[in-house]
Length: 351
Length: 255
Ligand SMILES: Nc1ncnc2c1ncn2[C@@H]1O[C@H](COP(=O)(O)OP(=O)(O)O)[C@@H](O)[C@H]1O
Ligand SMILES: [Mg+2]
Image 1 (cartoon, rainbow over the protein chains, first blue to last red):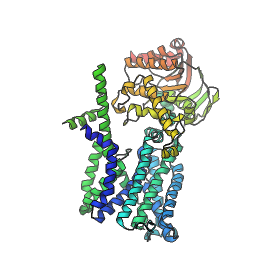
Image 2: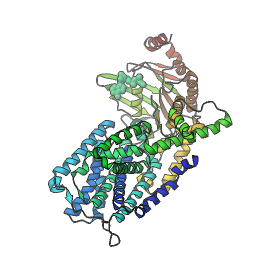
Image 3: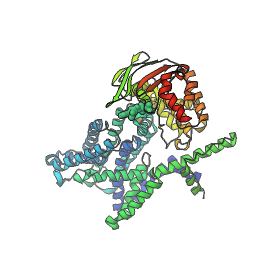
Image 4: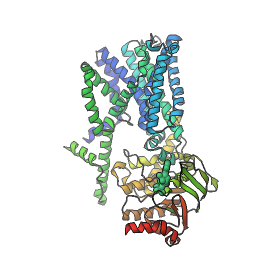
């Protein structure tokens, strides 16, 4: 048990996952599956962004899907109407994410908790309206077709599924790498302190606005970059990309995988994407399976798959260390009554 | 150390703190007592900069800090704990403390991206400071435990440690003995004495009279936002106004 547990948190697992992702197109001969995987990776990148502001920093941003759409539209407008190549447009999309993120962040982050959530919900809706109504710029509800694919400089053709898959995988790895750095660093700890409470963070000398805006801008750059990649693969977008439904989908991915954890965004996105694929034949009725599953998950794993695992493991290690300490010094207090879950989980696993 | 002049805070029509002037000398335990709703927590919020005063002046070490942002005041050496202990339940005691020293570091996003030497040095510094303060509050043996799994008294101590990690000179403790038993309260009082011995000035809000009387060097009594008395524990105990407004009624309740 312990060996499996250690394996699951060791870097080995992450490398194994990476190897698996790299060989996936070689072992799967179904191009559609590779395409589904690639788009799941794109969403995962956006969810990593959401995890920075919502998971680490604790601010529920409901405009996230809007920033995804902004990234997609920057690429679409620049490549179609202004004949830019994809890559410069991609960089412009990231910059647009940063600039709009900064402007929205500076205003909205003055609000706390649900006021912030409601405000960003409105921001998301305004983005949607602008994309739909500002026809001269966005082509209105018709959407934009013939978006330029990423150019491969004569080496690869990114209009083909497999090369595009690897391109997205590379961006995903970069995204996860940066978040892993961030989450372990003093900056990540600063964000976490804000998540506990604004008052506490300030009492520890943390400049709230500066750190919240930084987390927000990072998250919107992630969202816009993901949107830009999305535009490069589907090559046709419309105002529906900014539908708030996408934001709620991403929240679901985050909750299922584990909010505030490193691997949660990826695992949550993949799990739901493939589950959706499997239940596709049920169409609308898939919610009958989906809904109860989510409820059960939220009740029993409030921190998602990864979070639940980490808590369980942490408790196990802590208890072990205390027991060793106890053998030596025969202390009396080990378990406080406030941990029925830990005990239950332990028992379940020993059984 | 701390000089307050004519401090007032109004919430709408209510003056939660009303024209309070007081001086708290360095290197001792200064206590603030008063019935519920007297404005004690609000007084701390004003000193820590969490809310701006309506009127009055706050001087810390001779410096006017009135209306200064709370994070700047923290960097000047004012730390605090809250009436309800706020910690990150889902991580370990030691992990909770590392961020406490963040305000003494400089690393930014760029340091994170390139994993700079400055960042690595500063993280080491924060870690060792966390271990030091954990030792200071006597909890080294539970550094690896999850916050959700430790006792109420231990949580209070971790909150003290977190405040200590900021390298403060003045610490504001808001009802640290709330919700813990008498024996633990005595231990906590010892810890507060130890803080003073290490050169820290303590301001303390507390309801437990026996604790205050044995611990405080100076007491200020608030009632309905106004200062109704100040002095040594002896003076306060025998002050008829205080007995009338607070101690008397309290003892009645206890009796
Ligand atoms: N942020 C606030 N907004 C409005 N009223 C407040 C606020 N904070 C405190 N008060 C009011 O100020 C009074 C003093 O509160 P407080 O300082 O918490 O008292 P104490 O800590 O002495 O029990 C109370 O009547 C409380 O309702
Ligand atoms: Mg209070």
